[in-house]
Image (tube, rainbow, N blue to C red; front, side):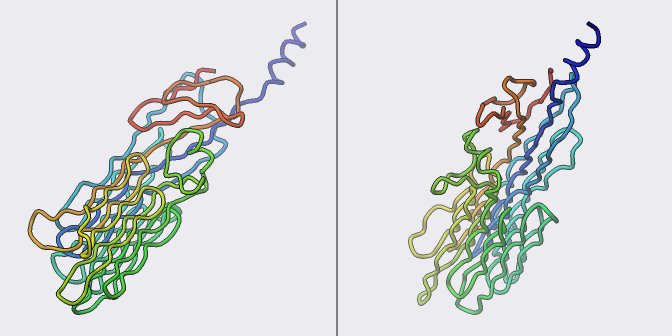
Length: 294
């Protein structure tokens, strides 16, 4: 009888856990014709063995704050003691020519007149774009995303934000997170660059990258600069036309954490729990604790 009981115990599958960690996106640059913010760094861990009864802290990085110079970096996200994903780099501000994007999970875009994009953290994102604009041309570049580099600013046209990551589309669909683009869900897109206006050249702002990146402001219709979407890790858009201390780039979007495991019933607490395709998903959009209970 004892042997039969032990056999039954050992026949039970040991659950393993897949974990997605996305940091906050970088803020877009401010002042004049500034670069877009980079998307938050993205890390995924598969087949993790977590201890029963242990609480794992889930820290959700906030997005980079608004700025009238270089955009502020986003903040890191972290699950327990696992390596943190790095906040996105801020976009290069437009207070003077050749202001470079800031490095981060994905790099921020450079501002007008040859600003260079910031570099990305290896394995977490992509670099920001570079501006090739010269005199009388004011297109800045886009911030990098978790799925692609930021677009270059060229002439009067600003670069688009780099595309976000769509690898975890099914996770995002199951939890109602990310940006839905024709049925595919993206996260951590870069912010679009800003573009200005002169008496001759009317600049086109860059579009935010799929995955919550904010649009850059332009000199055609003067739209509001776009913020990175909340809980996507999207970068903020760069400011376009106009100088002065009040012209701020868009803020970065906050990050997220998702934990999933294959089980018919919940074996943990924490976050918002959903079920899809045989998996349990625990989604964290604010700081919390994931605790394995069985």
